[in-house]
Image (cartoon, rainbow, N blue to C red; front, side):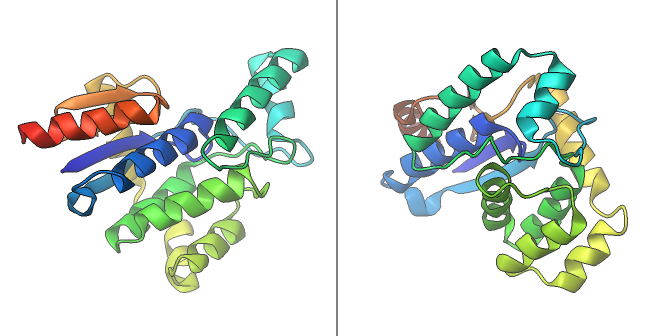
Length: 211
């Protein structure tokens, strides 16, 4: 069975939703016959890192969101993350453009390191306060999952894999995806958002029974 997942590194619901999917797959009888393919998506193509500002401060300015509303939102997300053993540190998370991280992901996917790279970069962003638009940071994270420094730098310092990222985003537009995470099971069943683990489990069973 093939599951396609459109996701962005800075999307909290993507991180939580993928963890729920992963748990549902682990508990599924045919877990060893399931392939998960991540697809690139950008929540904000114009996002950028601003030195000295946390993600929350940047969001408050760019979205015009009151600090109190932002505080309530981040507290809710932090609690939701804890329920699946993820740690969100919005107090140190840095706003960043994710296009280059996605380009390097596309290469990682081509050498069967896509999932490990995806998880490592998300953890770096949400838990460790890393600037995931910074080339040195991306090279370091890629090295940790077995991607050579030379390969990573070569890709980041060029425009390599840009078309792959744009292709995923265009495919999402054609399908009608307007937000992430978005999961498609065997090109037939779709789930939008970080839904309960039980829904992922039920959809796995339904899609498997029909294939």
